[in-house]
Length: 189
Image (cartoon, rainbow, N blue to C red; front, side, top):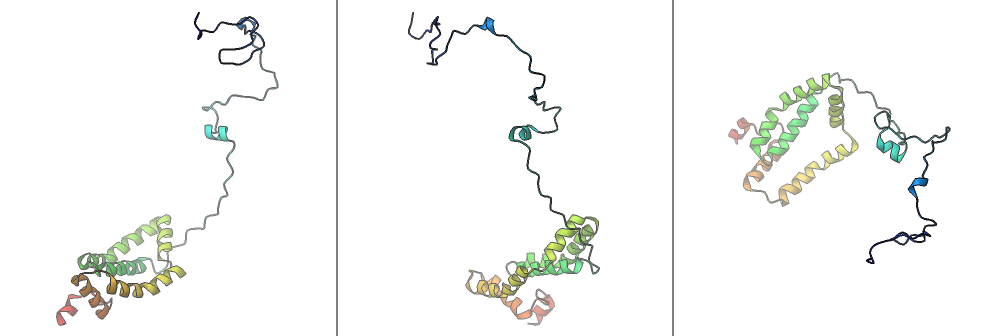
């Protein structure tokens, strides 16, 4: 007999992996007994239970505090088209400092884009809420707007721009936003 083979010991002292047992195990002595009548232990059936396995395994989830949602504000009487047009125009003017062609395309389509957003905001309260939040002037927005000319001046002076961009920035600074990109004014110079 080899050393790796295990032979049951009649007094049941030790198993092959070193565990101590009091007596040899006899399968014929096993008896199944019904569970006590008052037993509360049940096996969850995932198909019949409304709770997920995760809830069953980790316990009942904590109740989330529901924040009351503010009602969606009504559409402003003056509409959203004019503030959105101003926003698109400002964006186009900013882009035009770097790339005149793209900036002027944004400025030219500003009113059409603003009207499309306004129409969608009339029908969809979620879009209306998002646009009103975007257009709402907060304290931070006022600070950013106040510092924009400083940043433009520093950028124009210290950023490595080409002659084309510098010419556009100078033209913008000299003509103002109302006449920027107006070909009639540029011909007169």
